Length: 282
Image 1 (cartoon, rainbow, N blue to C red):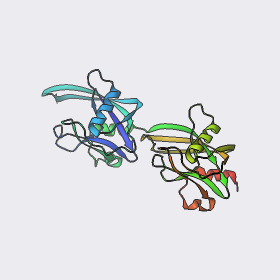
Image 2 (cartoon, one colour):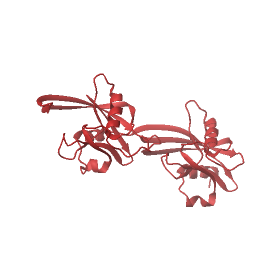
Image 3 (cartoon, rainbow, N blue to C red):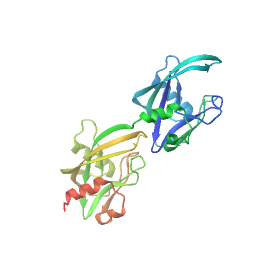
Image 4 (cartoon, one colour):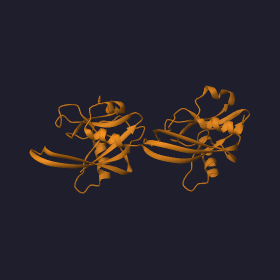
């Protein structure tokens, strides 16, 4: 019985290279390994990933189980009819993790690396069969989120925030706002988010638009997600003052009043143009 993690970031997958004592040729596999007696599979995969890559993995709530039967093989110096069950979890590591490296000494792996998914799929990166078997079924975690945003326009300028490296679209500009907490009223959410991202008090008005955004990418947590956002945009008034990001380690790293005439020179998220179009219909 063994537990593994499939860890994908952008167009790469985290793999471990089998040690030469196991195979003379280059061969990569998912990080993971056998359970110790009495060990929970979830604890086992966290331990194994750290030993083989040096990284601290988080894993999803569910797993897939793969059966592998070798009727005629060698185990511990004798011939065996071996049957293995491999439990594979969806896993992710922080986006600011260091480069992977093997921690355990004299283990079953000799290297760890982010390998290109395209190379794994076309065979140019040699892997054990488990890797391609898992990838054939693997789907990113599906997340649907409701968020609230503020459109504040003053003197032909619009209040925007720039997405930090922790966000899905770094260095692009968007409206101040963000996801609702469980049970939170959308108006309360937009007031809180505007305060966190700009330092300014906000008074939301009417709903201007509800924008649907769907994409696949790496979340701030490091998890690969199939992400669907419903973005409720309010017309808003904000207090006087210079905008300044208040939260640390958030998804915004700059806030500014941006002249409307300069928007074409910036990378802005679609919600910005949708909100402006709803405010000023043609």
